[in-house]
Image (cartoon, rainbow, N blue to C red; front, side):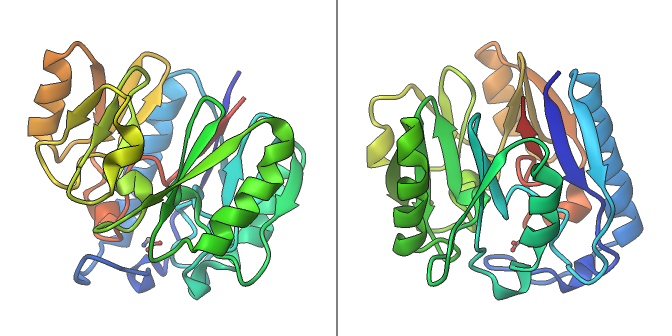
Length: 250
Ligand code: GLY
């Protein structure tokens, strides 16, 4: 059974990092309920959810996708571009150690998992405010022995690559305003109807997306995708999507 590793919401979520959104008050209790609903949805789709305890001193630590990249063979422990997020890596590495051999990205590299989209043996890595060229170079070195290659993608207008583009399985959902999409020209592509709605999470035959994007949802349903929505409105004030709150692996 595949695992979804998650972490409970920090009570200090209001001190989260923000890149493109203005700060607005977050109802942390409601954010925690929404996160539990997200975990229940993952469970209902057949995943074994391993929920780690909250890290009260680490505001963004619910977003477990960013400090690690889990592949079939290894887990790469990242060095987040946001300095306040670097301490998240240690406890996540501890949680991943029973499942994968760990490899580490070193300073001056910065890289966050939200910038990394895997399609087969290719990892598309966003060159963003959080991930630098050295981060992408070190990632490529670490995973090349396992047959992976890395393609750098300039991220122009969003926090992470996966804020702007995600895999639907047989196609990509993207906001072409936010990335240089040249690397994806050979793929079937669907453009979002709402700017923030490209971040979706495919689990089995289901595509999970936030409840707040009805137009993109309609666009996907018209094409035959099975959609499950989850209300993450409080977490979205922290620039969250649906991929960033779990690490899913077999
Ligand atoms: N608040 C999510 C992040 O900026 O990393």
